[in-house]
Image 1 (spheres, rainbow, N blue to C red):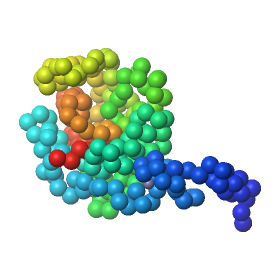
Image 2 (image 1 turned 120 degrees about the vertical axis):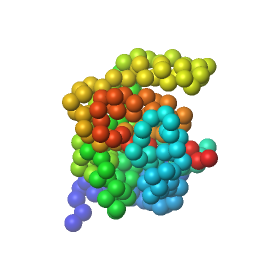
Image 3 (image 1 turned 135 degrees about the vertical axis):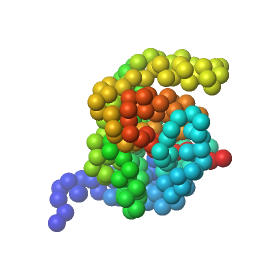
Image 4 (image 1 turned 90 degrees about the vertical axis):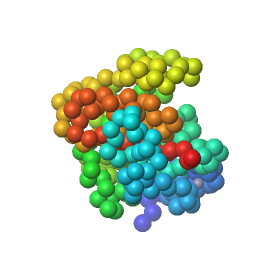
Length: 233
Ligand SMILES: [Zn+2]
């Protein structure tokens, strides 16, 4: 039987139909945040099926990554870009959680998730965190952890310095600068664990490289990487 709340939500939906945060279209009542057409058509990477995928290759010779996976491909002006923009700049942390849930469910199928003991997000500097109100990578991590029922250590890594503009520096300078910017909160939580390090989108990989090296130095058993999106080459 329909409750008062159902009537209210139907009424509000007529007044303020929700728009999909990926394609901008009006979404069906009962759907949330991202429409089912976008969900079906997202350009999936399927990186989990190939341990030597292009993303994993990006880290060869830089750090030891067990698995490197991404949910979808990022292209300029595709709906993935729009979705990430909402997640990062438009106060929509629910996008990260939802994508984490969806990706988590897809990776349940072949027991892929069993490669990981804990999830740790790439941290934001406290100042940035205060400004945004949430860590978008942690939203994604929480979504995955919820489906897989494994711990999500939101503050497993900490960012300690505010790295200034990185664009004018060489890759090596950038990396050294980055590495100094992170610290492990509690090495006991890391030791002997297979860790999935999560981030929203991968570009140069310098941040993930620095965090992965730090976790390995803290005696993590393995470090893998998962991002919502990766650029397609
Ligand atoms: Zn859509």
